[in-house]
Image (cartoon, rainbow, N blue to C red; front, side):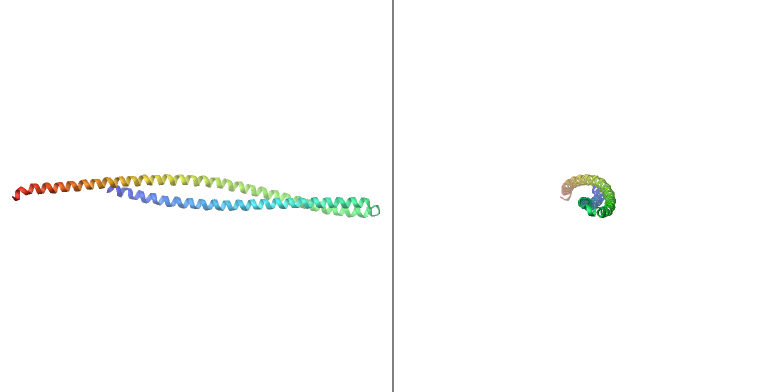
Amino acid sequence: MRALDEMRPKIVELTGAKLELAEKVEDLERALHSRDINISQLESLLNEVRYQKEESENKWQAALTEHEKEHSGAQKASLNLQKAHSDLEEELETALASLRNLELQRTNHHQEIARRLEEFERLTESYNTRSDELHNLKREVEARRRAQEEEQEFLERAQNEIEGLRVELDARDEEIQRLHEVVSSPVSS
């Protein structure tokens, strides 16, 4: 009986620890889900940036090709050569300004991509850390579960022993009662 009283606080402690570990595992799984959502959003943003960069480069190439065609046409038109040359220079300046603007945008896009990649690496590292923590917690929960099972087996063995002792004690009580009856029987006769 005393063994049961001694084991009861341990059982309560193990049950509390098991609940606490289960809460930690749930929190980590929620954090991992949130991390997966963030990674998906970052990948979507990265694809959008790449698409915008490609569109900008295509527009620049199309504008440059168009300007080259206009330049070729202006060379063939000898009567309007001077005017066409002036117009082409102006358009070229506009194209160069657009090109510089596109280069600036491309630089900004590269910086944004680098920042997103750095964030992705940080999230990946965080994910790996959380995964390790989750793995360790699961191992700890499993160890606690095995310990609790061992405690339960010990309690069951102890209860069986107590029951056996109780049966033995009842048998001895009956034997003592029988001996009392045997001893007192000749006196009364």
